[in-house]
Structure formats: C-alpha cells, structure tokens
Image (tube, rainbow, N blue to C red; front, side, top):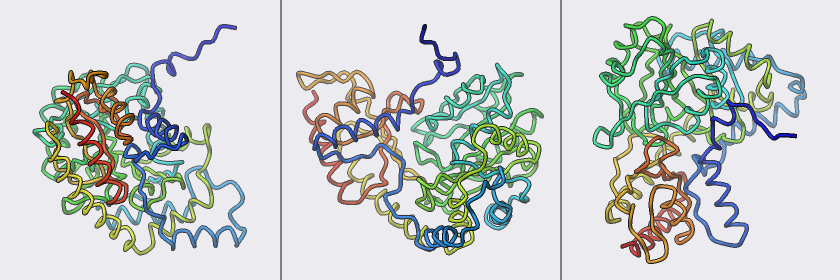
Amino acid sequence: MKESLSNRIEAIEESATLAMAAKAREYKAKGIDVISLSLGEPDFKTPQHVCEAAKKAIDEGKYFAYPPVAGYPDLREALAEKYNKENNVPYKAANIVVSNGAKQSIANVMIALLNPGDEVIIFSPYWVSYDALVRLAEGTPVFVKGTLENDFKVTAEQVEKAITPKTRAIIFSSPCNPTGSVFSRSELEAISKVVLKHENIIVIADEIYEHINFAGGNVSIASLPGMFDRTITVNGFAKGFAMTGWRVGYIGAPKWIADGAIKVQGQITSANCSISQRGALAAVQGDLTPTHKMVEEYNNRREIVYKLLKEIPGVKANYPQGAFYFFPDVSYYYGKSDGEKTIKNGEDFCMYVLDKAHVSLVAGGAFGEENCVRLSYAASEKELVEALKRIKETLSHLK
C-alpha cells in the first residue's frame, strides 16, 4: 500500500515548541541535566481553590455525563460576565464557546470561517500554530512582519497594504507569543479603523496572556467602536492560572461565528472535560491573588533575564511588556564556528546550545523570524541564571 497522507497534513509541520521539548526530554532521559526554556508552560502549581473545586465536583458525582458541546451554561455565563467587567466587551453566554484549549478554539474558528484560498493576515512573529491551523482549514497565510526596532509590532499601515479581496481574517496575539509585545489602545484603534473599511474581514485576537501584562492593563480590540461584531476573542486558563494540563480554552464571538464553532467542535471532540470546566469556573469567579503573585514573579524573572541577555556579546533583545518570553536576535552568531560546528541558522544555534550548554530554546523560524530564538522564562530564577551562564560560556567558543 502506498503511504499517502492528505495534502492538508503534508502542508504543515510538527509544532516546533513540542518538537524541541521532546528533544530536551530525550537528553534528560540519558541523565543529562537539561534546563528547558522551550515550552510556554508556567512552572507554578494550579491555584488551590481551583483544585478544590475540581475535587468537589468529582465527589459530588454530578459531572460524569457528557457536558453541553459549548460548555456548561454557568461557565459560559461566568465568562461572559468576566468579559463585561474586565474587558468592556458585552458578550453574553451565547457568544461563548468553551473548548479543549485555546488551540482548539482557534482551529474551530478557522474551519468555521475559511473557504479554500481565503487569506488570513498573520502578524509576524507569530505563535507557531497560527500558520498550521490556517493551512489545515485550506486557507492561505499572509505574513506581515513587525521589526525589533518597533518592538516586533505590526502597524496599521502594514495591515492596509496586505489586505486583498481574498482577505477573510487577521490574527495576532497581545501580549504576544513569542515576543512579549503588547499593543496599546492607540495602536489597536488604528488597526480597527483599517478593518472597518472592509466589511468581510474578521479579527481573531488571541488574549491568552492578558493577565501576564506589565504594560498597565490589557486592551481588547473587541471593546473598540464598531469592533464587537468584527472580532473573535480567544482566551484560556493555561497561562494566567497555571492550568496547561486542564485544557480549557474559549472564545467570545458574534453568535453566528460561535454557532459555527460549536458545530465544528460537536463533530470533532464534543465538549471539554467536565471536571476541568468546574475548575475553570472556580478560576474565573475566584480570587486573582495567586495570578497576581505569579505575574510579580514573572516580572522579577524578566528583569533578571533581560540583564543577563545584555551581557552576551552580539545578542539583541527587546524589553517585552507581557507574556513570559524573550525573542532575542542571535544572527550575530550565524556563520561562526567552534572549529567543529558552524552555526548557519536558528535551528543550528538551538541544537548547538542544547548539545553544548544543555539548555533548550526554540528556533525563531517557526515563529516567522529566522534571526531570532524564543526563550521562555517560565522557570525558576536559579534555573534562568544557570541557563544564561551556560549559554554565554558556550557561545564564547564561536569565532
């Protein structure tokens, strides 16, 4: 039998972040002390009140049947209330769809919205799955690149130039994975004015890092004049509540889009895990003190990593305003060699650092920028200091 996968699967690659994490685990399995800075995974425990709510749900024995596809009504109501209070976006429960992580939320939306050949403008650098999910839905990604000099942020003028009659959607994250950049209100207002000139364009705003924001608060583009009916807001519990393994993501969207996402989800996975939803309800309705403490710690780590990165010759980094990543330009080392290994690109750089320094990073090409690598500072201060020390020492051998 001829081995032949579908064209849509052949058109995408394995997630680079997951692939690098797998390599780091292989090294650890061999007894090598690897410091993993490749995954965007909080190193904190899920808040206790969230865990207690999940335990209570199990003990009550009321949540062992299939939940509604779009999520339990009380969770959807609570998320709508959260949007109204925290984001100034007047979603109702009918606008909310709870999914198995924000990645599925985005996949649902792409499948529900795109026809073959529809274009999706992706702000670059971008989260690795945006490109793949557009292609899976048989859409065409159109990359618009921000620069290090502009904190990696795309401008409204760039968006305007990228729009064609085939443009169906625009997707970006703020705070951004991988750069940590945060769009200001004025920047989002300028982008929204461009969008509102084109009646068929939908904005997909990924706000999963909204709580990890050092810029003085998150602005939801859906809250701006005219944008409620033109925006899908993506969010989840993984980052702000250290709930990566619970797999709870959600969207707020115009009802016709929400209904389309429900139809997609109903055929692929059905509802999110019942017990995870009870934990999510406790998270969204509960005390945010644990989240605020996490953000304080991330801020401390940001300062440490920024200082140490500046001490590495040739490395250029912006000062991220959110999330928990740095996206330094390491192209200074391309073409350099230790006499045995020559660094040609970001992939070589990351493998060299993994082999020699035993620190895992992710090459920037997977995020749309070949000159950079992504470093997650969702690790302890001790690990971060040691990792940057190892990287600096290892790179000193490249001439």
